[in-house]
Image 1 (tube, helix red, strand yellow):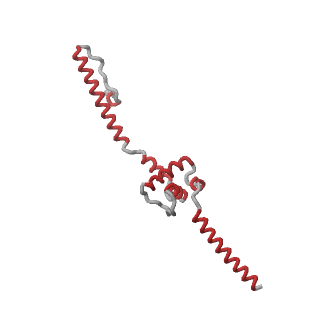
Image 2 (tube, one colour):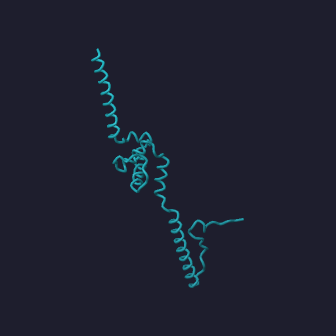
Image 3 (spheres, rainbow, N blue to C red):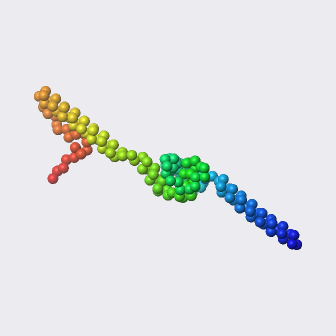
Length: 153
């Protein structure tokens, strides 16, 4: 009876040790899956866009929120998403801001150059008509919206 009890105790210790080792090994070797990430970001297409942006940020030197574990940047980005280390709103803001590179200033410069060019052409046309002695055409208010606004009191 004592022998059976010792065998049972030894088996229990070995079983627990084996389970602990296997659990550690599986946790260490487990990769992130799409199913893990879709729990946080349900749309797979959105997941691709957000994780690729995050991988580019990591590649550019951004701080990572999980252990590297000799993983590539794309795997790290997916692990961060699966473990909810970064919010979906933060990732969306990063994607949007990556495409907003002074677009407003460039558009204002182009509009200003186009308006100046148009005004020069209109002035040259009016001078040419005056030199020919032709009657002046109806007043051209311009092609830009702010030139066509008439305010009546």
